[in-house]
Length: 386
Length: 134
Image (tube, rainbow over all chains, first blue to last red; front, side, top):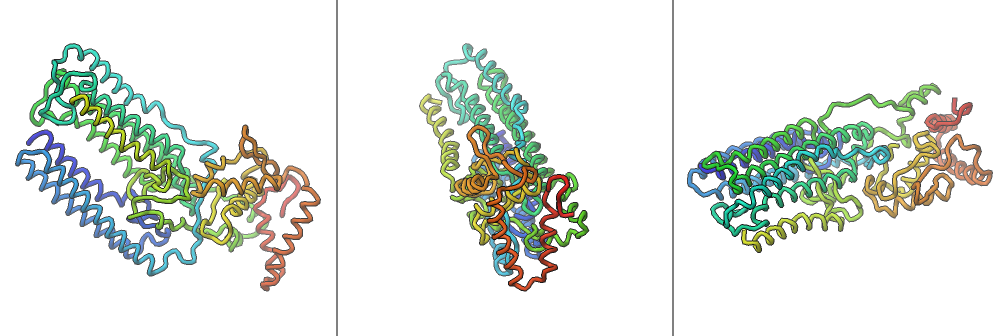
């Protein structure tokens, strides 16, 4: 078994587990990409579909991992990548099946009929915005700096032909581009993820209108934890790229399964990220309630001798409000398209994180740039003969 | 300030935003001198067009509740402690209040209930010292 095959097997197993447990970390009011009122979270159809999804994705994950182990004995590295693609497609199919069944029952039973569908915000988010933890960016930058320094020291002594960056077994003429290809990769990852996090810090917080103040507090903690997990993962990705480029600079030589060792930091980063995601949940939905909310209105009602129930009547901010049913803006439950929404990024519906608003022109341009940048870099690499 | 709107409700969104801000000023959540988010920020947070928020702010500015400048942004100009309002405004407000109460009376709501609802609404407001519903 080669290092490439081992990496392929671990990736198949990792994504199998990750996609199987994703419903756990998603908000209880967004089930398989379908918005539901809070009191429907325990509906029979949701319990049934959740159970079916766990079973289906678990079986898919086990089958794909076993198949990946078996085909890795054949020699070539690519069959494990094909299995990974098939696994992702099959899990996506399971998600769509669950989404379709829940959406059908939601529509038939009219789950949102008669409910006050609201969108809420807490302006304290803008008055006291969370600060991007710049210090957590330092490890990733220090790894890049270390890579550049080692590369600069080793470059004069490198042979006339270097192992190609993106295809094992091939060689390219010695050049700055060929030698520092992985540094370009480090810079791309660092710039992309930092830029995305900065956009997210300016984006709309994921607030539940039923309990806006509390969910704003949870979202703050979620964003802080998520950002630190992403920046840690980024530093470990950069470390993996450093460790992968050192053999090309003849600092050390790894052979056989040992050549998979540079992937360990990446694996550690993904595990850290997954643990944080499970602990906090999407938007902080798995965090415990932080503090009891002091209701000024109810305190004043008590002062004049009127019970809280009087203030809960129609026209007095009835607590029966729920998040707006915005399923129509979510294509396949995964892609957000809303031309009236000026947001560039919004919170994901399935899993943890954010997605682009594909109805926003700036978001589309940024997304195109993210795709075009590696394509352009690859073209430069090819032009340089790597 | 917690601000919630019903985007699919019968009341125009700009009117809802304006109403919620007026209520926040009356509640004491947005006292005079406090700032509001920029129109773009609030539009992003509510997922509405920024022209909609602009319209709300403009209405509040015309009503004398908001001061908008390029340097300091949107700032609340008046609250319960800013002294009595303009007599012309009171006359206009009394007319609107009469219509609102007439709606309740026309629908058959007893006088006692109307007064009770008024008390409950007023109980949420932050009047200046010495005033109030109690």
